[in-house]
Length: 338
Image (cartoon, rainbow, N blue to C red; front, side):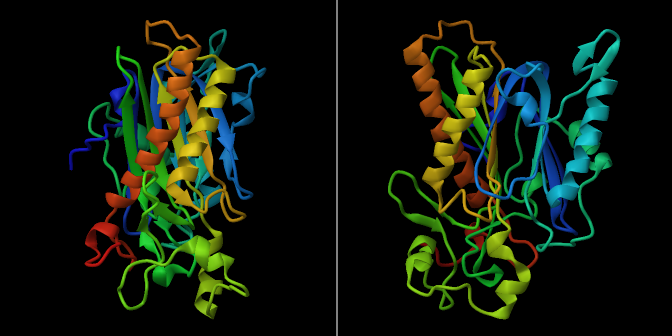
């Protein structure tokens, strides 16, 4: 389906590749920037699974990176970054120390082990395959890549949840200045329209009459997640939304970290609640620096605001474009939404 909200590949020099395992409900997604980009990161929640994030902080040695990996498989899935490193090395991309090339591949994971096959996770060969499958044009969304095993609205457990997935969006600020995002939406919370607060995807009511409001449910006195199945599947405590926000503006490292921070605001607009004790919500920032305009304070503010909006739109796309898998229905396939 054509994405009227654009895609992360609307920024020149950015490509996206997916590895998708529908049988075992897992996968990984790589965002490549072969010419290099300034990197940054912002992490929220209390359950992150990440790699190489410290190098993205201001003051650290490495300025430019060439790929970021988003993956299923929980901590096991970080192995897939090795395959991305191998592909980058083979093509001559990475941090150079004389004749030595060391590709730096920041990565973050979602927990999808209880959704598909817990003993099948993305590995190095799958990260490599995602690189081989890269495109700088149409980006597949929904139940693909790292979003294959993603679900949302898990406050009442898997039996009430809705399929999540990968989504992307871009915002053209005029004069060729662009901000774009990609998200892997695996939130325990509801997905809402930022403009109206309307719940797009929440825990399904048993009578098929729309969605519960997770925030209201959790505020009720004595609320507990009901039933032994919910305790067994851990679905409400195994969340995490991941994202990458990219701009062609010439940002420095501190500004790129701030860009990632502002994109987290977009997550808070579209996911309620987010940044919970079961989340490892992580957003990476990339700045390619190819825009030739003047980045004054006003333009920088516009870029920051667009980062939040692009991330919110990408999150919504991740849910609206998903398809059903492993018995969890997708929003587009439900006969009665809200």
